[in-house]
Image (cartoon, helix red, strand yellow):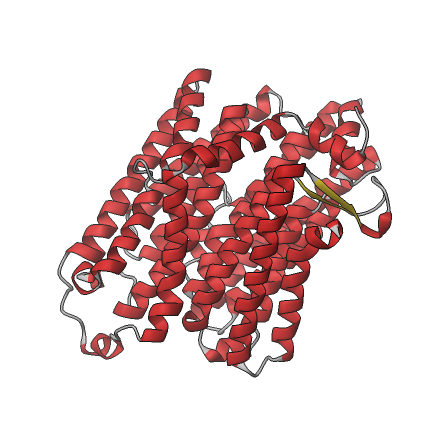
Length: 503
């Protein structure tokens, strides 16, 4: 029974994908099946979180093969929260997709590939085997590549070349690192590796291997200097696809880094300094890249890069408080970034453009919707007491405590630039008068229908409400993030729950 519950998010998304594939020429039924599957997966993810919170980690051995020989699935608090966030965002984007994605794309397999992508994400977060993690990564990459190219527009295809080239490079590096690690230890089980890596005599080779893992996962997370593929590709697909990409795909790389560098490798002072340098350069380049962008989609793409720097900065600080801030920011960022790209989809639907020079007057025409969007944008900027404010307090406090003032300066700089850009978007899109449109643009202006108001606006309101609750109820979220941080700082808890013995 426990195995069925733990694996249910993976199985439900797989079954949903297969059913949608069988109904590939019927757009209407696919929409209903997708929403139903996402709803059931969300309910099961909530159930798994409840079980984990009350009873501790859940471990399942595929085929009853005990570790380190078989494939293990592990649900500790971190993986449970990541699966819950995946299913939460997946549910919202499923509803949004029913109007945001045209029937032609749906008939060419959009919903099938979408649910395979969610399946791969859930598998990544639940696996306890490093090679199995690579397999789930590849499922996500293949699915995301298909979604990125679905529709076959020239701009999409150009972006897809950069996207797949960099992600394939990351996969090769990841697989190479796995091969070296297996050669050193004879094991692929993450918990077992956590024990065996410490006993390897050649710790220089271990450090080189850890750097390979960082490079592989760092490319997937879009850290400096290998981030350029993200802003070159995330602005090209439809907003529903960009929402799931912006919210979850880069966070998959961050999750992998947290797993590898808390359980398998214990970073020394050199690695911690390396994390800090990468964090500072990622925050600065992401912020500077966003400043001169006229398209809000491209601007938000660069802000994804910028804010990944916060998470890497927390890894460089490597303390309980810093890890709590990392996880809190992950929770906030997954919800907000997904919502931002759905927001751009509605703006495009209403104004037929995402160019700041062609936008304006949205607050006058849609005041209630504009207020919801204000919650999203100012949460991103970290205005207190919204959700983006609290994790930064953790990171700033720990930076001061450790005397890492360059990291502190970069966090403040990135936050300041984000605030300026959000204020600029609010002024240009919502406050100013709508510029006189071109005749061809006027023909594209369409008010939202009743169906679109439900399917497009409701998911945005849903995620904005969750973000607002997180900010106003930060104490409850901190209770969760503090527990996760303590687990990460004490990897023996994870190792003992998987191996079933005291160490």
